Length: 496
Image (cartoon, rainbow, N blue to C red; front, side):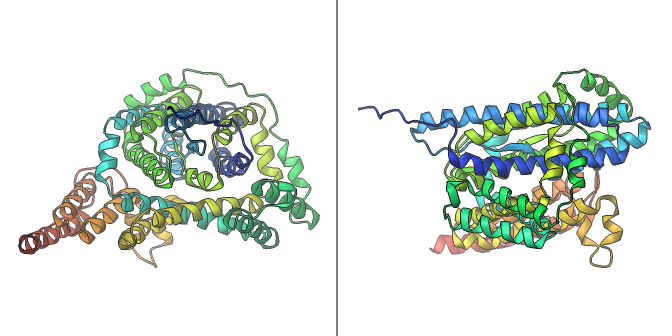
């Protein structure tokens, strides 16, 4: 007899917690984008009238698609506990486009509008490349060890999410620690909040109220909040097409930034889909990479300049018990908030220290999943894969000044941070292979790492032949070492 059809709700209480977590992830990026671009000299008409609406269209399209994809999976597997994939702008990719595409374009052209159009074209090309990468996405997912991929994701979670947001939490310690306590009790210990309110909503209400009551948030925040209210329609334009001509004729150097960061974005999507499979919901990685590429291109058609990806916060949403409603609500709210200039208003009214603890939980859940989804013998591989992101975090925060800032600590920080995602995965994969005594496989990963270093995808500031010769030699030495042990292992395997 066929199983009875399940009821997969459009929205449930747990979606509220996940919505606030995802909303804060994206709103933080939107606010950083606005502040940074205005500081670079881009006019508010481009920032609020083109870039943010374009990003909102991409976020809306992707979230709506993944909500539909979740309902499809729920019907296929006849269960109602499916969580939709989170979707948004990747923080590391955002910073690379800000300082590796927008800023150089502005400096080279001396014209904010031309620089914006070049960045839109670069974003469109990035989306097209990721859509093409989706053809081999499943093959890559099959051959890369889960511990290596989840270890790399855990590195991002530890530094850019849990670590960074814990800093923000403690900027207002009385408020931040109180809200963090609410999150620990409600989301970690799973204790119900008063009046049966969702934990995140309760935390934001209590934290914001207290911030104003004790004077940690001044009244000037309200006046700043409504400065940019207005109407910014979500309309397509030809900026991507005009920028394409500029990009291909006089600014090809920008593409050397676009290619590696697009590969990074595709791998980030793959890692996060893998993490979600480990948490219980299996999505097609090729489809997700294609959707992310398409979402990026759609955003570019509306003036957006930042690639989008399956978001690292998805496992946090799964832990919260969310379904598809949080994804639908996130897409709708971002479209409306961007159209009417409400994003800046909300960001100004609610102190960062109030919402940061929610993201600390998201980071915690990602790190925990990396370990829970793997056998204990692979824990060293996970730990090693997390480490390159410490260097990447420093590089991202100090940007072009990183080399000078960290020179007294170690000269390796900058080169370690360049291509950190690739380094994390390859080191993790080599370690997993060695743990399993698959030394030929470990040697193959070392050779691939040497190839990536040779062309500048790792340990180099830009693409070039023989870009990082010392690292090429280092990885080749590792390959020789693993090859030696593969020959040593063969007789032992025959005897056993």
